[in-house]
Length: 260
Length: 281
Image (cartoon, rainbow over all chains, first blue to last red):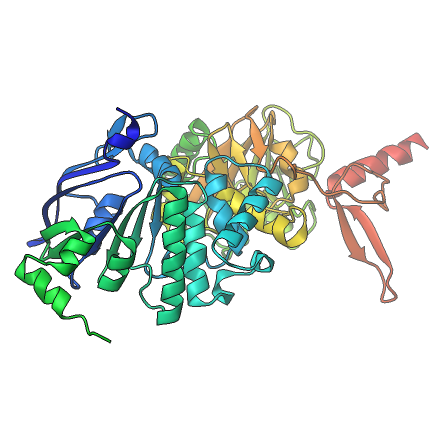
């Protein structure tokens, strides 16, 4: 069996409480290499808590998150030492924040933002770091002449694309995205979605994307989890869930989309 | 010596606390050790950290030298020297070779230090990662995990904007292959002197309440890129007073018609060379 035949991520009984509030009830799912999984649900349903636990930003109360390394070995992200987890986070994972200002260094040029991960994994040749940064600006459709500009001089859509480039530069295999199209206007959203779709296919990324926008889920994802009150109420292929929702909550969610 | 003060101004308990912090700093080269910094009779930014470290180190037989930007005769240097002459009654000197403890603001003497000497730096901001990460909790964790990749981002920005590394003071170094350290605002010209120095080097930051150290003969590397290696400043002329081509030069405006003089910032080094030239004549 090759690495491709095994799940990249196996999440089992992942749970998180904030005091008495159980934000995430024991949850499990598998994610396969190259697969895009959407997590949908209303505000407060535990989507972001789930993502934060996966990213290691919030310590989970229990459960396991097994991640398969390139050599086929699997490791439990929740049990790892922090130093190893940080190294893994820089090389194998990406995390795209809803607000690009959380994911970018605003006082550092666009090139520096893209190069940071490369320098963090040991690149020490300026010319090569810069060439790689320029190549990534091309890929995310930002003009090369903007490489030395500060991100705060960029539009919201450009900042979001820069954040994506910054995350993908070390060729991660798993990218976590928290509402990547939130706060952008519709035409910019469409362009960003096109870009994401192309990059996901080109780089064979596995993606967990949290969104409340079912259109984004429909366009990007293969599979979908519907969450409510910290629980997964329904999961399945995206088209199946959206066209034939089984759980009353999913039905409500799907029927609440305005037909334009 | 004024008998109304305890020896070297600080009380004995405070000095013990400081010595413990210093010992820990020496044991872990480059690591910032917190200490309970006291109010000193001089303002923050004038060397409250350095003066406390010096107070904890001084013994009756020590000979103290104080320099400010290399000079023995500027306000800061004169007043700190006078302060210890009065409160500790120790001998003071302007000669680098004779001193056992040298408190310095922003320079390392040009004359190579020898074993047994202690160099005390005054440090304004001890955290080299502060530029990238404002949270103290996070910078401590980054030090703990040796998570230093981001350090090169600052150098990247220099090269991207100016075509070369323009950071010219407080140039970050890696100590003993482990901790990244801010060598206080010394010019990068002095960075190579930190490496394998026979003297003990101590760094005190009074406002930030940290001490750190480079023990004698410790490896100290300046961070750089493969295609933009670390370089020190150079001048295209010698010192206008002593003719040295190997020292760090200050530019002094001499008149209002554009006249200027480049001379050694280390006044003792310059004087020593001029004395030798006098004697040789």
